[in-house]
Amino acid sequence: MARYKHIDMSPRLLPVDLQAQLVPGSFAHTLHHVVDQLDLSAFDAHYRNDESGAPAHAPMMLLKAVLLAYSQGMVSSRSIERACRDNVLFIALTGDAKPHFTTIADFVSRSRDAIAAVFAQVLTLLDGEGLIGREPAGVPDASSHFPHPCGSCSPSMA
Image (tube, rainbow, N blue to C red; front, side, top):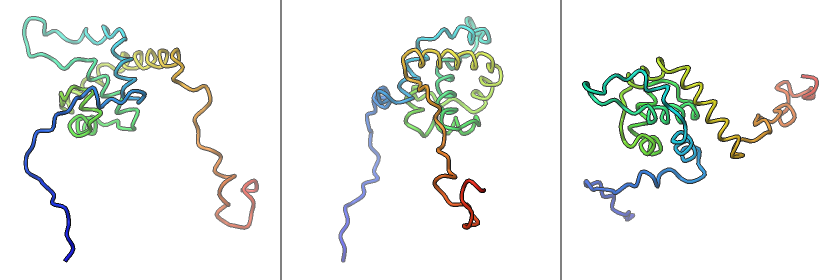
């Protein structure tokens, strides 16, 4: 009979250094540090909980989660919430805050213009650091690599 290594599913505590999850040179690491340098005062106008009310999620944290999600093609607030709960990069960027999808949706809907302005600032900073290429990053011309479906004509005749 074949022998296999035992799989131990008992509870345990795994120490996680959230900063260490943001690998230097990765988009998430760069995003984390670039957003920290920006003026985000445009996001503060909405919050009126200085003296009363519950503390709000920091706009900086929500912005990092939204921008990372958008960079990965996630646009729904529910998918961003799920990523903040399950994905180590999102957990690291949000400090394990786990924002609710309605919080994310409200933040995006009321801050569209501010998010667009921050996105432009991020692009400017990345360009200044030489982190954005000048060449278009497109898909190579597929017609030169794959035959036309009919099989008899050349790609240029298609």
